[in-house]
Image (cartoon, rainbow, N blue to C red):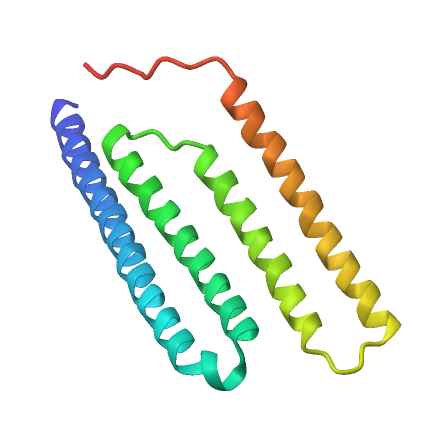
Length: 158
């Protein structure tokens, strides 16, 4: 019976090590991907701003930069988890807010480039933007509630 507990403890240790390794590699990947997208977004902006216009290029750059912020927020969340072993809810709410904001900007950019817009397309745009704004408001209330809840003591490990 004692041998069985020892074997289980070793396997749990190996699995915890693999879990940490998975978080480390995922976090590093988020950081590298964010840096690559950042560099590529600015390169595309610099090369296309003159030919395709400043507004479309600027909106594309803004969209890409918001994606980079999402990736960095997720990267920071991974680091915080590795340091504290506690997953916090607020960064995920922030990512949701940024993602919905990206969608509103993308929808607006798509709308501005339509030469002839039908009434149906306009109402679809309004529904899309309205839904994303509603989600943003719900997430902002979620952030408010998370910040107002009483702080919980972290579990102390022996």
